[in-house]
Image 1 (cartoon, helix red, strand yellow):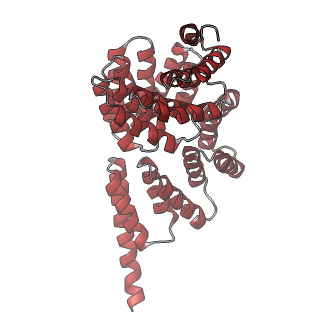
Image 2 (image 1 turned 90 degrees about the vertical axis):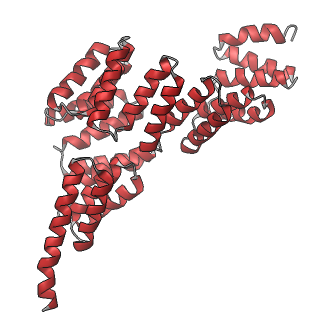
Image 3 (image 1 turned 45 degrees about the vertical axis):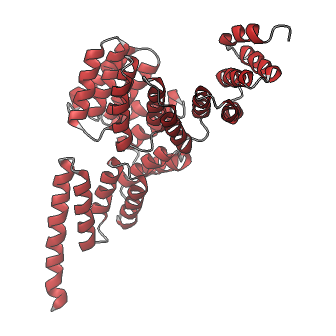
Length: 368
């Protein structure tokens, strides 16, 4: 009797929580939606659907570990296997820098369903990140061919055109994306970037605000707004926007870097806070020489020349052609009265194309 009575009760409870979760997801009340999907899972733990949707919500909340766990469950419990969780899992691997795993998932999805446009679009984005521009374009075009009504590959193709300096072509792609999906925050944000490059700062700001109005969880719009303010030397305003971006996506190193730069450039500068931001960027991207150079430069501004040397040295180890790090290390060595070593660094910087080190060498290295 207990089992017979409990089955419909459980089924109805699952339906109630699942329906509420979807409603909250559509309203972008993501934390509440996640909670309702978890309750639905409690009542039907072998149903792939709530795992998949909770994974999508967690992806939007930048809980990448939790999202991967959910997509794994969706794949495990779905028979036959559906490709959506595989593609989304690949997207998370891409966020983590696990590019081999990401390629594997996208390729697996395409092998299961060669007409699945989303797999091509996401694989194209991965190829773009790895500087395979032609491969990325091929995948974007394939995605558009398979589903001309899907907006994302137009945006990504626009980004390639933007990088190549074809601003009008990029703008055309963003407009096409908005015709397909007028509520696509990324399209407004990217269009704002084009307007900024064309000198239309007011138009850019309006587009960023439109993107945020549509999707208050879209970290890139806050980041781009910060870049706009920083370009106008409105460093305090930029810091506010970068902080919002970091709150939404604490795994994006560039937001920490740019916030750190603004903290160092504002009046009065806050170099100690800059160092904290650059340190976080290094934690997220330890192999990026720019981050090590930034923290060394900030230590030098604080007068801690000796501590700056290992930072510049690490930047050079990561990129032996990084002439700025040679120049900056040379300037710190001058302050430490290590003239011979400094002059060697200035010479190396000049050899690598750093013409701004020529005057430094003339000033400090005469006769050497």
